[in-house]
Image (cartoon, rainbow, N blue to C red; front, side, top):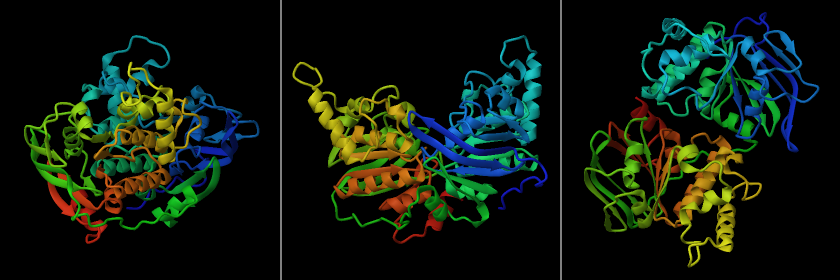
Amino acid sequence: MNAPQPSPAAAPPAIRLRNVSKTFGGVRALDGVDFEVAAGEVHCLAGENGCGKSTLIKIVTGVYAPEPGAGIALFGQDFPAVTPEAARRAGIAVIWQDLALFPEMSVAENIAVETLLGARPRLVRHGAFREVAGRALAALGVALDLEARLRTLPIAERQMVAIARALSHDARLIFMDEPTASLTQSETDRLLGVVRRLSADGVSVVFVSHRLAEVLEIANRVTVLRDGRLVGVFPAAGLTQSRLTELMTGKTFDKAVAATDRSAAPAVLEVKGLSRAGEFRDISFDIRAGEVVGLTGLIGAGRTELGHALFGMTRPDSGTIRLNGRTLALRSNRDAIAAGIAYVSEDRLSLGLIQPQSIADNTVITVLRRISGPHGLISPAARDATVAHWIGELAIKIGQPSDPVSTLSGGNQQRVVLAKWLATEPKLLILDSPTVGVDVGARAGIFRIVRDLAARGLAILMISDEVPEVYFNADRVLHMADGRIVGSWDPRRAALTEIEAAVYG
C-alpha cells in the first residue's frame, strides 16, 4: 500500500529545526541537527537507541531548551525556544510507548480530561466528557465503549484512546514512540490505517519505530540520526530495510539463516501434553542441548502463558515437563531456578530489572546466596568478580557498575537481564520477546550472544511475535495459535514468506 501523500508544498512545515545541539554532562546528545516535517506528512525519525531521537522530541515539545544558535519554527511561527505550554498551544502532542493514561478512569475521561480540565480542576458535566471523546474517536473512525475502564482494554485500543486524546485538543503534529511494539499484525495494520487517515486530514505524524518494514510502508520520508548527528533525509520509497539499517548503524549485517541440525544432541527439555485451561492445550515439544527453538505466533496465542508455566509462575492442569530426563513438579519460579531454568521476561522495565538500583545489584540479585559468606553477608570481592565477569562476557557498555541500571540504553539493559540469569548457570534459557524496545544494532548483538550461548550447549526457547527474528536466529521454528502448536519448520528448508503467511494469514 502506498504511503500517504503530504499536504501541498505551499503550506508551511509543521516543524523546521535548524542547527539544534544539546549536551548533557559533556556528552553531545545532538550536534547541529536539522529536522523538518511537512504539513500532513508521515515522517519517520530513525536511529539506534542513544542516537538523539528522544532528545530531539523533547526539544520540539519544550522539555529541553536547545543550545544557542538553534532555529525553531512551528507551523511557520519562529520560536527562540519552545515551552511545553507553547508546544501544546501550537498543536504538538507526543504518544510515548507507555501511553501515560489513567487505567482506573473511563475511556471518555482519559480522552477529554486534559481538554476539559486543563491545568486546574473545575466542575465539568459528565456528558461533556462523552461529547469530546465521541468526536475525537469519530475523527479516527474508531468505536469504543466510552464508559469502559481503560484497564479493561487491550493495548491496541488503549493506543486509540491516546491518539484520540491528542486530537481532542486539536493536535496538528503527533509524535508516536514505538506505537506497534506490543501489537499483533492485524492491530498494526489498523493503527497504520488510522495514521493514514490522520495524514489525509492534514495532521502530521512523526513515527518512531524499530520495526523497519512498517516504517517504510507508512512514511513519506525518513530522517536518520546516528550518534547525535544527522545522517540524512531520505524518501521512504527508495529505501530497503537493509539500507536503512546500514544508515542507522554505519554497519552491514548478515541476514543469513543460522539454523543447524541438533537432532543428535540429548534432549534438555521435554514437554508432553501440557495444558492449562483458557491458556494453552496439549503442548508437546523438546529442545536439545545447544539448540535454539523459536516459538512464534500472534499476541494472545498463549506463548507467554506457556513460558510462565515452564518457569513455574503458573501450574499446568495436565501434562509433564522433564529437564535432563527428570520430571519436574514446579510449584513456583524458585523451583524452576533451582532446577536450572532461567526466564527473561518480555516486560524488561517492570519485571526484568529494578530500575532505581545499580547495574551491579541487578546483575547479582539472582545469586545472592552464592556470593554471601557463612553469616549471610555479601562478599564484596565475590560480588565485584561476578559483575566484572558478566559485564565483560556480554560486552555491556556502562559507566560504572554503581550507576543506576536505568541510565543504560535498551540494548544494554537487556544484556544486564541476560547476565542476571546466566549467573545462575541455567540448563534452559527462556527468552520472551528479547528485543522489545531494542534498536536494530543492539538486536544483532543480542542474537550473537544467543548463538554463542547455544554453541556452549545451552538449550534456548526464544519467544517472539516477529517471524524474521526466529527465522534467522533459531534452529527450529514452532507456530502457536489459539493455545496450540500448529506448525513446525526448519529454516534451512522453508522460506520466510511461507512462515509469515501461516502466522499472519
